[in-house]
Image (cartoon, rainbow, N blue to C red; front, side, top):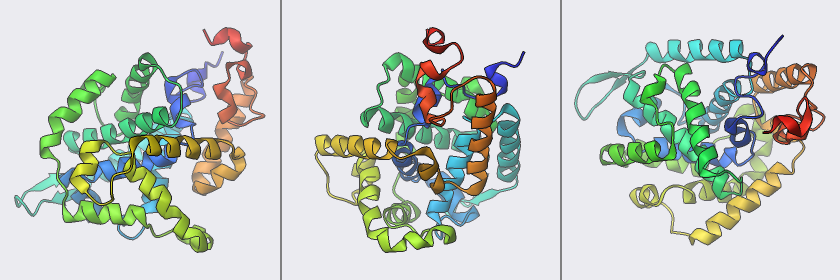
Length: 305
């Protein structure tokens, strides 16, 4: 008998499914990139080894593909993308002009920073935008994300698995963070990005993106906004209201419309996931997002407990 863990890496009953299927992830993803940029060595690694400065939106979509595969993909798909990412990272180096040293991109400290900046952003934005998660569920989400960290080469025991551990991690790493020229440029790019070729038809509506970028920036932790000092402060209540409005409007989009923002490869992976879940008895008539409702699982609400 095939178990649900053989169908998707993080099944619908996990806290990860609740967070990662939520459309607030778009804000969380950009917020995560802005937060990651505050680590000088991590930012230089991106700057020196990618086309981020030419296509920051493309990096967001590639990140979305990785997160999607290690959440909604099959174990084989997740393992494959993990091998690919680790192979790429293994071959890359970072030239640190401040010290003259050469660092590996797959340095565990850098990988851990990227992971924590991402998952903290996804979780913080989703909860603030209105996703009802208890602290216990939030702890469970972070514990589940240790598995995702493993795909990039981290050891589970080295990764924060609770809100308290995550807070301790950020308290320890903050003295090493600063706004480098690359970090400042990153925020400017993310406030006004260059769209990839296949989405250039959206350029006429690009001015509407700035409020979105501003929302991502304004959702950063206060200490991070203070370090950047790029935009005026917005009342916390206004940011929360804007996040809730964004989430409601995005969650109202039909799944096929929403998924057009992903790469064709990501869309194909999500389609395959829906097909596998449907064959296993899940009601996917409302897409993957509909599976946040336990009544759409095999056996109905009785499995929610």
